[in-house]
Image (tube, rainbow, N blue to C red; front, side, top):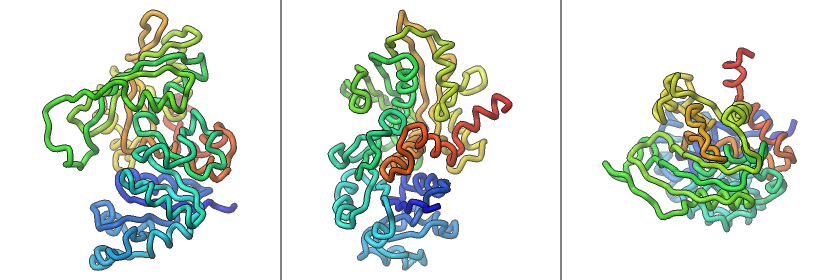
Length: 348
Protein backbone atom coordinates (compact mmCIF):
# COMPACT_ATOMS: atom_id res chain seq x y z
CA UNK A 1 0.00 0.00 0.00
CA UNK A 2 1.41 3.37 -1.05
CA UNK A 3 1.43 5.71 1.91
CA UNK A 4 0.85 9.45 1.57
CA UNK A 5 3.95 11.39 2.64
CA UNK A 6 3.15 14.19 5.10
CA UNK A 7 5.26 16.98 6.56
CA UNK A 8 4.49 19.34 9.43
CA UNK A 9 5.68 22.97 9.46
CA UNK A 10 5.71 24.39 12.99
CA UNK A 11 6.32 22.09 15.95
CA UNK A 12 4.30 23.94 18.58
CA UNK A 13 1.06 23.19 20.42
CA UNK A 14 -0.77 22.00 17.30
CA UNK A 15 2.22 20.85 15.27
CA UNK A 16 3.33 18.33 17.91
CA UNK A 17 -0.11 16.82 17.97
CA UNK A 18 -0.43 16.78 14.19
CA UNK A 19 2.82 14.84 13.98
CA UNK A 20 1.56 12.32 16.53
CA UNK A 21 -1.79 12.01 14.78
CA UNK A 22 -0.27 11.46 11.34
CA UNK A 23 2.19 8.92 12.75
CA UNK A 24 -0.80 6.83 13.84
CA UNK A 25 -2.28 6.69 10.33
CA UNK A 26 -1.28 3.38 8.74
CA UNK A 27 -1.78 4.76 5.25
CA UNK A 28 0.38 7.85 5.82
CA UNK A 29 4.09 8.44 6.41
CA UNK A 30 5.30 11.33 8.55
CA UNK A 31 8.38 12.58 6.67
CA UNK A 32 9.35 15.05 9.37
CA UNK A 33 8.68 18.31 11.18
CA UNK A 34 10.16 21.78 10.75
CA UNK A 35 10.79 24.55 13.26
CA UNK A 36 13.02 27.55 13.72
CA UNK A 37 14.64 27.27 17.16
CA UNK A 38 15.28 24.98 20.13
CA UNK A 39 11.92 25.60 21.75
CA UNK A 40 10.86 23.47 24.70
CA UNK A 41 8.90 21.26 22.29
CA UNK A 42 11.97 20.72 20.11
CA UNK A 43 14.18 20.10 23.14
CA UNK A 44 11.70 17.51 24.37
CA UNK A 45 11.67 15.90 20.92
CA UNK A 46 15.46 15.60 21.14
CA UNK A 47 15.38 14.20 24.65
CA UNK A 48 12.81 11.63 23.54
CA UNK A 49 15.31 10.28 21.02
CA UNK A 50 14.12 12.17 17.91
CA UNK A 51 11.16 9.96 16.94
CA UNK A 52 10.54 12.41 14.07
CA UNK A 53 13.12 13.90 11.70
CA UNK A 54 13.63 17.63 12.26
CA UNK A 55 14.17 20.24 9.55
CA UNK A 56 15.12 23.88 10.03
CA UNK A 57 12.66 26.48 8.78
CA UNK A 58 15.36 29.18 8.79
CA UNK A 59 18.65 27.77 7.38
CA UNK A 60 20.79 30.63 8.70
CA UNK A 61 19.67 29.73 12.23
CA UNK A 62 20.39 26.03 11.90
CA UNK A 63 23.30 26.43 14.34
CA UNK A 64 20.84 27.21 17.15
CA UNK A 65 19.80 23.58 16.90
CA UNK A 66 23.03 21.84 15.97
CA UNK A 67 25.04 23.66 18.65
CA UNK A 68 22.87 21.81 21.18
CA UNK A 69 23.44 18.50 19.46
CA UNK A 70 19.97 18.44 17.93
CA UNK A 71 20.22 16.70 14.53
CA UNK A 72 18.81 18.58 11.53
CA UNK A 73 17.90 16.66 8.38
CA UNK A 74 17.70 19.65 6.04
CA UNK A 75 15.71 22.78 5.36
CA UNK A 76 11.99 23.41 5.17
CA UNK A 77 12.34 23.33 1.39
CA UNK A 78 13.96 19.89 1.66
CA UNK A 79 11.06 18.69 3.78
CA UNK A 80 8.42 20.06 1.42
CA UNK A 81 10.14 18.50 -1.59
CA UNK A 82 9.96 15.07 0.08
CA UNK A 83 6.23 15.21 0.86
CA UNK A 84 2.93 14.89 -0.95
CA UNK A 85 1.17 17.35 1.34
CA UNK A 86 2.18 19.77 4.11
CA UNK A 87 0.37 20.53 7.34
CA UNK A 88 1.15 24.13 8.25
CA UNK A 89 0.89 24.78 11.98
CA UNK A 90 3.03 27.91 12.08
CA UNK A 91 2.06 31.20 13.69
CA UNK A 92 -0.66 33.24 11.99
CA UNK A 93 0.65 34.88 8.84
CA UNK A 94 3.65 32.58 8.43
CA UNK A 95 1.53 29.96 6.69
CA UNK A 96 0.58 32.42 3.97
CA UNK A 97 4.28 33.08 3.34
CA UNK A 98 5.03 29.35 3.35
CA UNK A 99 2.34 28.85 0.74
CA UNK A 100 4.65 30.45 -1.81
CA UNK A 101 7.10 27.58 -1.22
CA UNK A 102 4.34 24.97 -1.43
CA UNK A 103 3.18 26.44 -4.74
CA UNK A 104 6.74 26.65 -6.08
CA UNK A 105 7.26 22.93 -5.40
CA UNK A 106 3.76 21.94 -6.49
CA UNK A 107 2.69 20.57 -3.11
CA UNK A 108 -0.73 20.62 -1.46
CA UNK A 109 -1.14 22.05 2.04
CA UNK A 110 -3.53 22.27 4.96
CA UNK A 111 -3.51 25.41 7.11
CA UNK A 112 -4.77 25.91 10.65
CA UNK A 113 -7.48 28.27 11.87
CA UNK A 114 -5.20 31.21 12.61
CA UNK A 115 -4.59 31.93 8.93
CA UNK A 116 -6.88 34.10 6.84
CA UNK A 117 -9.52 32.21 4.85
CA UNK A 118 -8.01 33.60 1.65
CA UNK A 119 -4.95 31.35 2.08
CA UNK A 120 -6.97 28.31 0.99
CA UNK A 121 -9.37 27.12 -1.66
CA UNK A 122 -11.67 25.46 0.88
CA UNK A 123 -12.61 26.34 4.47
CA UNK A 124 -12.82 22.75 5.65
CA UNK A 125 -14.51 20.57 8.24
CA UNK A 126 -14.33 16.79 8.05
CA UNK A 127 -17.95 16.15 8.94
CA UNK A 128 -19.77 19.19 7.56
CA UNK A 129 -18.22 19.64 4.09
CA UNK A 130 -15.74 16.81 3.45
CA UNK A 131 -16.66 16.39 -0.20
CA UNK A 132 -15.87 20.04 -0.97
CA UNK A 133 -12.27 19.37 -0.01
CA UNK A 134 -11.81 16.35 -2.26
CA UNK A 135 -8.93 17.05 -4.63
CA UNK A 136 -8.42 20.63 -3.37
CA UNK A 137 -4.87 21.95 -3.31
CA UNK A 138 -5.14 24.21 -0.25
CA UNK A 139 -7.50 23.70 2.66
CA UNK A 140 -7.89 25.68 5.88
CA UNK A 141 -9.22 24.23 9.12
CA UNK A 142 -11.67 25.95 11.40
CA UNK A 143 -10.50 27.08 14.85
CA UNK A 144 -10.66 24.72 17.81
CA UNK A 145 -13.95 26.17 19.07
CA UNK A 146 -15.52 26.16 15.63
CA UNK A 147 -14.33 22.62 14.93
CA UNK A 148 -15.99 21.21 18.03
CA UNK A 149 -19.07 23.38 17.63
CA UNK A 150 -19.64 22.22 14.06
CA UNK A 151 -19.27 18.58 15.11
CA UNK A 152 -22.20 18.98 17.47
CA UNK A 153 -24.37 21.16 15.22
CA UNK A 154 -23.70 18.99 12.17
CA UNK A 155 -24.74 15.87 14.09
CA UNK A 156 -28.08 17.47 15.02
CA UNK A 157 -28.53 18.95 11.54
CA UNK A 158 -28.14 15.59 9.80
CA UNK A 159 -30.69 14.04 12.14
CA UNK A 160 -33.47 16.64 12.25
CA UNK A 161 -32.25 19.75 10.42
CA UNK A 162 -30.97 22.90 12.12
CA UNK A 163 -32.27 26.34 11.19
CA UNK A 164 -30.68 28.53 13.85
CA UNK A 165 -28.29 28.43 16.77
CA UNK A 166 -27.19 30.93 19.40
CA UNK A 167 -23.97 30.17 21.25
CA UNK A 168 -22.07 31.47 24.25
CA UNK A 169 -18.37 30.60 24.40
CA UNK A 170 -16.57 30.58 27.73
CA UNK A 171 -13.07 30.71 26.29
CA UNK A 172 -9.82 29.79 27.97
CA UNK A 173 -7.45 32.74 27.73
CA UNK A 174 -4.24 30.85 26.83
CA UNK A 175 -2.82 27.38 26.38
CA UNK A 176 -1.11 25.64 29.33
CA UNK A 177 2.44 26.95 29.67
CA UNK A 178 1.74 30.27 27.94
CA UNK A 179 2.61 33.52 29.69
CA UNK A 180 2.00 36.09 26.96
CA UNK A 181 -1.51 36.88 28.23
CA UNK A 182 -0.18 37.83 31.65
CA UNK A 183 -1.61 36.92 35.04
CA UNK A 184 -5.26 37.93 35.16
CA UNK A 185 -8.21 37.90 37.52
CA UNK A 186 -10.95 39.08 35.23
CA UNK A 187 -13.41 38.07 32.52
CA UNK A 188 -13.43 39.87 29.20
CA UNK A 189 -16.27 39.96 26.69
CA UNK A 190 -15.79 40.25 22.93
CA UNK A 191 -17.87 42.06 20.33
CA UNK A 192 -20.83 40.01 19.11
CA UNK A 193 -21.29 38.05 16.98
CA UNK A 194 -18.26 35.86 17.66
CA UNK A 195 -16.17 34.69 14.71
CA UNK A 196 -17.05 31.09 15.57
CA UNK A 197 -20.71 31.76 14.74
CA UNK A 198 -19.74 33.49 11.50
CA UNK A 199 -17.36 30.66 10.60
CA UNK A 200 -20.07 28.10 11.27
CA UNK A 201 -22.30 29.89 8.76
CA UNK A 202 -19.47 29.83 6.20
CA UNK A 203 -19.27 26.04 6.51
CA UNK A 204 -23.02 25.52 7.02
CA UNK A 205 -24.69 28.47 5.22
CA UNK A 206 -28.20 27.12 5.81
CA UNK A 207 -27.86 27.68 9.58
CA UNK A 208 -28.47 31.14 11.07
CA UNK A 209 -25.86 31.44 13.82
CA UNK A 210 -24.88 34.12 16.28
CA UNK A 211 -22.83 34.11 19.44
CA UNK A 212 -21.09 35.82 22.31
CA UNK A 213 -17.58 35.01 23.57
CA UNK A 214 -16.22 35.53 27.09
CA UNK A 215 -12.48 35.14 27.83
CA UNK A 216 -11.76 33.45 31.15
CA UNK A 217 -8.44 33.22 33.08
CA UNK A 218 -8.08 29.45 32.73
CA UNK A 219 -5.99 27.30 30.36
CA UNK A 220 -7.69 23.90 29.98
CA UNK A 221 -10.58 23.84 27.56
CA UNK A 222 -13.42 26.03 26.37
CA UNK A 223 -17.09 25.49 27.19
CA UNK A 224 -19.79 26.40 24.67
CA UNK A 225 -23.50 26.54 25.38
CA UNK A 226 -25.76 26.12 22.34
CA UNK A 227 -29.45 26.94 21.91
CA UNK A 228 -30.58 25.19 18.72
CA UNK A 229 -33.72 25.61 16.64
CA UNK A 230 -34.53 22.53 14.57
CA UNK A 231 -36.80 21.83 11.60
CA UNK A 232 -38.21 18.82 13.40
CA UNK A 233 -38.88 19.23 17.10
CA UNK A 234 -36.91 16.80 19.21
CA UNK A 235 -36.61 15.76 22.83
CA UNK A 236 -33.56 15.46 25.03
CA UNK A 237 -33.49 11.65 24.80
CA UNK A 238 -33.38 11.78 21.00
CA UNK A 239 -30.57 14.34 21.13
CA UNK A 240 -28.70 12.21 23.64
CA UNK A 241 -28.91 9.23 21.26
CA UNK A 242 -27.46 11.35 18.44
CA UNK A 243 -24.48 12.39 20.54
CA UNK A 244 -23.92 8.87 21.90
CA UNK A 245 -23.66 7.55 18.33
CA UNK A 246 -20.91 10.00 17.28
CA UNK A 247 -17.31 8.78 17.39
CA UNK A 248 -15.96 12.28 18.09
CA UNK A 249 -18.41 13.23 20.82
CA UNK A 250 -18.11 11.90 24.37
CA UNK A 251 -21.24 12.12 26.54
CA UNK A 252 -20.35 12.70 30.20
CA UNK A 253 -22.32 13.29 33.38
CA UNK A 254 -21.88 15.70 36.25
CA UNK A 255 -23.18 12.91 38.46
CA UNK A 256 -20.12 10.82 37.54
CA UNK A 257 -17.67 13.55 38.56
CA UNK A 258 -17.27 15.46 35.30
CA UNK A 259 -17.82 18.82 36.94
CA UNK A 260 -16.16 20.92 34.24
CA UNK A 261 -13.17 21.45 31.96
CA UNK A 262 -10.58 20.47 34.59
CA UNK A 263 -12.34 17.15 35.23
CA UNK A 264 -12.04 16.24 31.55
CA UNK A 265 -8.39 17.21 31.37
CA UNK A 266 -7.63 15.14 34.47
CA UNK A 267 -9.58 12.20 33.04
CA UNK A 268 -7.54 12.35 29.82
CA UNK A 269 -4.34 12.21 31.88
CA UNK A 270 -5.69 9.30 33.92
CA UNK A 271 -6.46 7.49 30.67
CA UNK A 272 -2.77 7.80 29.86
CA UNK A 273 -3.33 10.05 26.85
CA UNK A 274 -0.12 11.73 25.70
CA UNK A 275 0.04 15.31 27.10
CA UNK A 276 -3.44 14.80 28.56
CA UNK A 277 -4.92 15.20 25.07
CA UNK A 278 -8.48 14.34 24.16
CA UNK A 279 -9.65 14.34 20.55
CA UNK A 280 -13.35 14.21 21.42
CA UNK A 281 -15.54 17.07 22.49
CA UNK A 282 -17.67 16.30 25.54
CA UNK A 283 -21.38 16.93 26.03
CA UNK A 284 -22.76 17.08 29.54
CA UNK A 285 -25.87 14.91 29.74
CA UNK A 286 -27.37 17.12 32.43
CA UNK A 287 -27.01 20.18 30.17
CA UNK A 288 -29.57 18.90 27.66
CA UNK A 289 -32.78 20.87 28.24
CA UNK A 290 -35.76 22.08 26.24
CA UNK A 291 -36.52 25.79 25.83
CA UNK A 292 -39.90 25.93 24.14
CA UNK A 293 -39.40 24.18 20.81
CA UNK A 294 -35.64 24.79 20.95
CA UNK A 295 -33.08 22.59 22.63
CA UNK A 296 -30.02 23.55 24.65
CA UNK A 297 -26.79 21.78 25.59
CA UNK A 298 -23.21 22.49 26.66
CA UNK A 299 -19.98 21.10 25.20
CA UNK A 300 -16.33 21.07 26.26
CA UNK A 301 -13.64 21.86 23.67
CA UNK A 302 -10.14 20.42 24.39
CA UNK A 303 -8.43 23.19 22.45
CA UNK A 304 -4.99 21.64 22.07
CA UNK A 305 -6.07 18.44 20.30
CA UNK A 306 -9.61 18.82 18.97
CA UNK A 307 -8.57 19.88 15.45
CA UNK A 308 -6.24 16.90 14.87
CA UNK A 309 -8.90 14.48 13.52
CA UNK A 310 -10.33 17.08 11.13
CA UNK A 311 -6.83 17.95 9.90
CA UNK A 312 -6.21 14.29 9.11
CA UNK A 313 -9.58 14.27 7.32
CA UNK A 314 -8.29 17.18 5.23
CA UNK A 315 -5.28 15.12 4.11
CA UNK A 316 -7.60 12.32 3.06
CA UNK A 317 -9.86 14.68 1.12
CA UNK A 318 -7.10 16.68 -0.57
CA UNK A 319 -5.19 13.55 -1.61
CA UNK A 320 -8.43 11.78 -2.62
CA UNK A 321 -7.59 8.86 -0.37
CA UNK A 322 -11.30 8.60 0.37
CA UNK A 323 -13.81 10.64 -1.58
CA UNK A 324 -16.79 10.53 0.77
CA UNK A 325 -17.32 11.91 4.25
CA UNK A 326 -18.17 8.60 5.87
CA UNK A 327 -15.19 6.77 4.36
CA UNK A 328 -12.71 9.56 5.14
CA UNK A 329 -13.75 10.34 8.70
CA UNK A 330 -14.23 6.64 9.37
CA UNK A 331 -10.64 5.81 8.43
CA UNK A 332 -9.30 8.72 10.52
CA UNK A 333 -11.37 7.57 13.50
CA UNK A 334 -10.15 4.00 13.09
CA UNK A 335 -6.47 4.90 13.23
CA UNK A 336 -6.88 7.45 16.04
CA UNK A 337 -8.91 4.95 18.08
CA UNK A 338 -11.93 7.25 18.23
CA UNK A 339 -15.20 5.69 19.25
CA UNK A 340 -13.46 3.00 21.30
CA UNK A 341 -14.71 4.65 24.52
CA UNK A 342 -18.33 4.12 23.37
CA UNK A 343 -17.80 0.42 22.74
CA UNK A 344 -16.00 -0.06 26.05
CA UNK A 345 -18.59 1.78 28.15
CA UNK A 346 -21.33 -0.19 26.38
CA UNK A 347 -19.54 -3.42 27.25
CA UNK A 348 -18.96 -4.32 23.57
